[in-house]
Length: 196
Image (tube, rainbow, N blue to C red; front, side, top):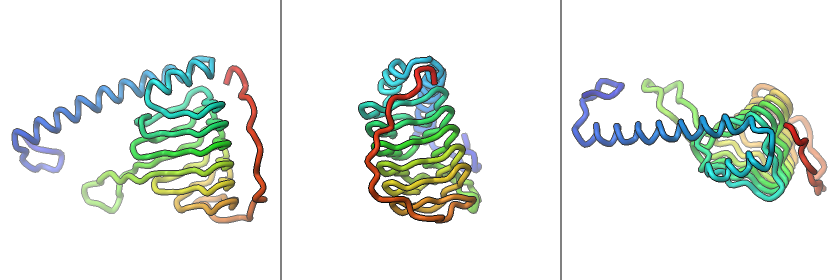
């Protein structure tokens, strides 16, 4: 038997790859179930099942309908944080979202991608961290290895390829600094809409 690059595999390598593939199938099925449950119109029910699925969710946080997870066991969401509809949360590496963070609708946060310069198109993984009081605007994309500082703002539709300093507002493709946000952030996000 050969791998995808044509290299001949030993018996133990075949067994390891087979076991890994079976494990991936079960993970993909769990993620599929979480995706279906993501359309249940109750924050409490969704949070309950997301926690069973492995997502660590802080007190008072709301995850709106239609969220997609990639390996939920590596995802931590702080207290009083809101994740908007149809967002993608990638847990193939560590994803840590702080307290009082507002992640808007259709945001995609990735911590794994392919190395397009590698002849084997290998996977590259790196953790993503989002600090307290950050705001991620609608349809923003955050790429692997990025740290969003405390109180930072990512504008709508921005593609974040590099770290964002604390309290900095960034926007564009790729995201660039626009101006600084006031540093006295102390708000609570409040309750989420019931049927979102």
